[in-house]
Image 1 (cartoon, helix red, strand yellow):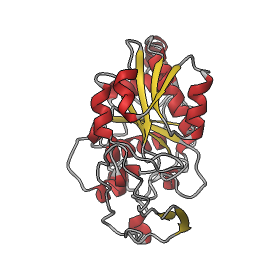
Image 2: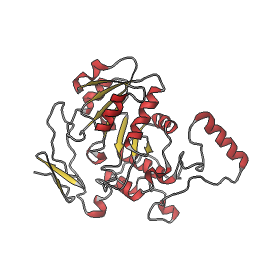
Image 3: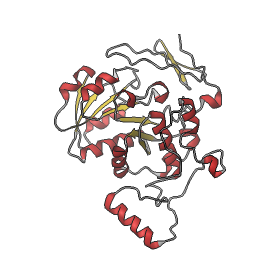
Image 4: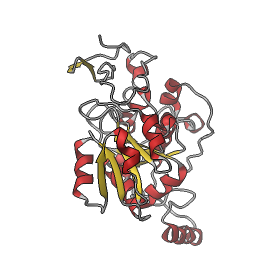
Length: 312
């Protein structure tokens, strides 16, 4: 959806992106905060041109160009979130969904629609992701392996390699660059829910798709249910056609901001969070990252204020 924003890829610090990404047009609108759009449908003033847009949508399944038509196809509030997440993850685009599992389901359906139903997955994964793949409800066939076995597990019909690092809830880590190299031309999807773009940007290490359950660290306060896939424009088009994001998935816009990115500048978190190294395969979890809601030390979770320091 075109919001009239300047989407050119300028180089801006992560802290600046966290504040301004998806909001570049607000000054021109005379606004400080992005509005929450609650419309389910939008008015049409020219029935002939509107009919042409709807015909185009019926043919392609893609969101029509121009003003929004129907909230489930496109919503200005959701579009701002998608723009912000894409900028934070360093991808061309992003598509928001009502939950992280809806986002993963859309990716599986897109690949399955191309006849690429085989998935190579590395455990541990978030439990619901594991269950979705194991149940085969979307027609996928999964091969479970470890990071070193990814290349050998690939088949001609492999449509996706799925990993999560750090994993939920074990915090197990893998070497993303090594796995991306092993994938070859097969898209690598990385669940980046726990790390967030503050600590890790998988696209910089070779991932084509970056998944978030925005319910967790991006939302940060237990009052948002949402998911998002950051990816290239081509894959975003497929995801949007497969599962148009519901209008309500991101209407709580202030709480959809990444807790570890946006709120540090509102509540005083350190401006220079530590970035973990590209961990070698098989290395033990660092268990020492500071987040906005918890921090981990020696395997023990405890409440923490955002200090921007490493737990000893």
